[in-house]
Image 1 (cartoon, rainbow, N blue to C red):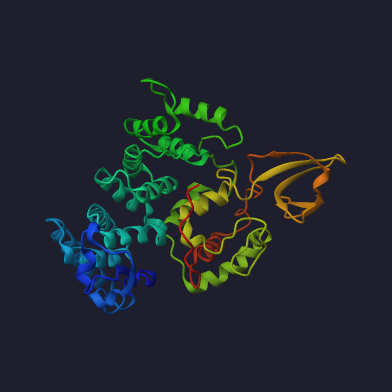
Image 2: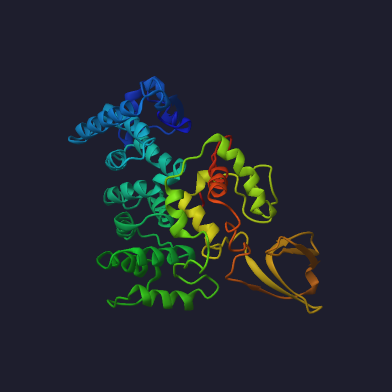
Length: 417
């Protein structure tokens, strides 16, 4: 099909009767969900992109873009919103600039509509299509002036700080200032600083203003630069990694410069996914990470990674494992009474025993009573240089395996802690 199977279901209130009534204003809508498939509304396309020639696909896409632009020229009626959802589903399969720009305009209109079903689609795109999270966050940021108390919008935009950049990031950070809640947890404060550092000088006020809104510093009318917030963050959160972007290690074969473009435009084929299984083991990933039934569970589970993270996020985590630390798998140093010092991921065992897994995946057990002290580390247990022994074809296969969602249930949305 021209759109992914997970989009086939939409949720409408049970009192709708017929499909158009599903788009009644929020105040008059029921809450009980009724599953209605898209084809009942005429939303399914006949044929597939695989059955069309390249010139036919291009012509079909242009027709969709033209139709969307015609709809967007006037206030969207109920049937227009339905058609816009359909068009967005089709355009989401394309990666050309024309399709991407049209999808942004469509998502913005759906977000501005304040219609529950339209918003369900917008939120579904965020959850199910990680590569489109930035454009969804931008669409939400454009619509929040009408509903600055919608905490669901707020949560999506905070979560988007991991991926938004440029103008989208500035728009999201300005929108977040309209909300009273403050994401003052270290990881989100740090992320605002990091994203702010990527912005042009004339956009950085969006970051510093949000930091002042969330952190409450500096007091009064004084303004800080991002450099001042970096210094403040280091003092306020001494156990956290510094609020600065990592730098490629010297003499590395694989780095951001060599791999970023490869990953950005990467599409996984079935044979490549299967080849990636062997590379997963060759690279040693299975020693700490479980992917389906493969591997150990010492570190984060990677089974649903393709649902949860963009390809660029995955690449960054592999190249710079200490840039983002997982709170559920803290790296620590344990000092024992017998003089030993052990470093790695701490794991509780029985009531009287604990264990630690070293960066070389060696597990050591010890008695809780023998612990002198436990010190958190700002360095990940995952070693750097994981990709160095691999060829480019092997890296492609590994990514195909990591991002594959075939047969993988969609997890619940990431928790905003």
